[in-house]
Image (cartoon, rainbow over all chains, first blue to last red):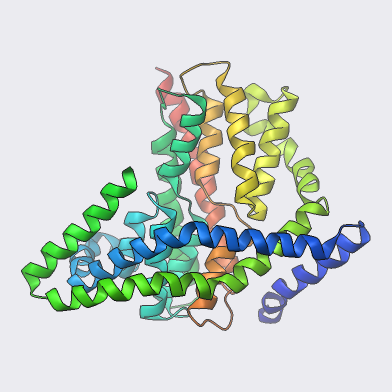
Length: 174
Length: 192
């Protein structure tokens, strides 16, 4: 199982490369083009990350995050979500860059392979920036009556957070 | 605009909290640290991000997107019964889901928005059940290889940044299933 997982990403790379070459794709160009896009994405989010990580670090240093955690801890403990992930739960639906910033802060404080770090990473990986997405779609279609789209989307987010905490415990124990 | 409020809120709360708890100096130091950390984070994420976006671009050009779309179409028809016969909309929706699965966000959004626009033509100004379903599916994450998260873990020094994949898949699947179920149930409630 562990070997399978370790070989998954190199396996995908090899598989895509062989399949691409067999299909006559200009593989090298595709790799470079994708990497270039990756840099563009980073360049696009870098200014927001600088601003938001500043705010996140300030919140952490001021003790506001611990306070929020303490307020919500009775509820979160009951459903098995680590209290330290509270800031992530709050910003995830609103801003992707802010969520990334909070996630990075959690990973560096608790360690990427700690239970909190893993839970935060799984939460980030299994949820989306709900309000942003809703705004893009409704804006594009000029929808004025959104009916149940937002509550249903938030149900999916809540389920994602709970499931992330549960799945992390399932696969990594603790 | 919304982000301005979020950011201002975060900064004001930290300043007020720092004054109340007497942690002014820590907050001042943290504000400088955070700005540097933002730049460092981008740099340390760059390697894994670029590599995987390259691999996914190669997969896209090799026709993986079309293959996935074809596989998904029968399932998606059941999710959007009102548009099951609309070839163009179903093509857009299945391409949108496939691009989301591969993590090609830049490709997925225009496809999804175009599908949404066509759906909205039937019910102008009001989100139909199908349109709500499309939005719920796009606000849930279904990425097979969560590149950004893996890059984030690699940047934080993880030796095995991809070991969370099964957990991500499981919780994504649960989240999407709950979203679809919620949309179905609410569609009945909202009808009244």
